[in-house]
Amino acid sequence: MRPSVLVTKRIYPEGVELLRKHFDVDYEATDDGLPREELLRRAHGKQAIVSHLTDKLDGAMLDSLEGLRVIANVAVGFDNIDVAAATRHGILVTNTPGVLTETTADLAFALLMSAARRIVEADKFLHSGFWKCWTIDLMAGHDIYDRTLGIFGMGRIGQAVARRGRGFSMRVLYHDSVRASEELERELSLEYVDSDRLLRESDFVSLHVPLTAETRGLIGKRELELMKPNAILINTARGPVVDEAALAEALHEKRIAAAGLDVFEREPHVNPLLLDLDNVVLTPHIASASVATRRRMSVMAAEDVVAALAGERPPHLVNTKLWR
Image (cartoon, rainbow, N blue to C red; front, side, top):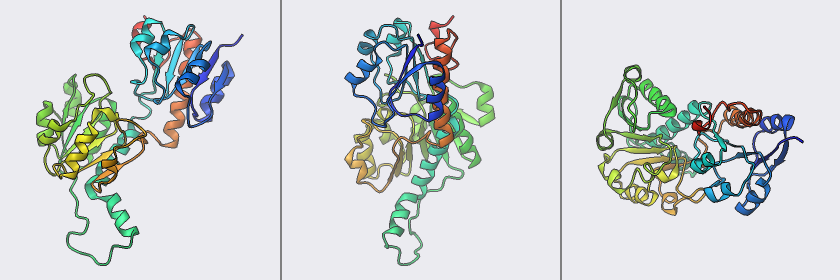
């Protein structure tokens, strides 16, 4: 009897085809995903789950899924999974790192540039027929070249954003719980600073941290008050890293200049105050959404399941303590 795999939501067909070569596949081929009770019902008896960031696989759910051997998350982040509970039950957890690094960095820098140069606002202005003549300060924004870029989180994506910043001759400050190597600091001309100094000195603040107990609410009212009036905040990490209400207030009162957000505290809900502002660029969690990247993420998750159910170490194992 072949092992059985649940795919909780639509992925690219190449991933499904690979799984079907090896397993019986219960595929939820919709974009809606599964309500919790339906997810729990269909996961019973499965040896693997291919999950999405919208699937909340908490301890209570994992406690009831006897025989589950691997969860392959189609994302680099895995805050939707109780990894500690999975580890207690001997369930391997995998993610899709690396492949989305450059794509996500591209989107972060696109948000940075769009917010700085008021691209979305200008596009709406023109399409609405409001452009009647050229004026000296029409849609005047903020320079990017030779400014200071502050990065929270110097992992793969943070490094890729830093490289883009160097291409614009930006001074790059960073803060991380673990300081980068001297070699990397030299290569990217990075300056390690504490979080308050980063906020005070940066013209652009870009967030690239995982969502943990320590990073939840990383940017709140106090942090926003430390930022320059002309500063711009970019978030392509996870929504709860930023206090949306505090950010909306700061943007409304022009205590910071602008923001570019791809993630939100209660997705897909967006704070209505943000929707009413012109000085914020909003995208619907699309940082890794290039065709090539999302296709490869789907296949990577499938490859991890194939390896795990064959008794091999999955290439992208998160809870490595289960594999000695």
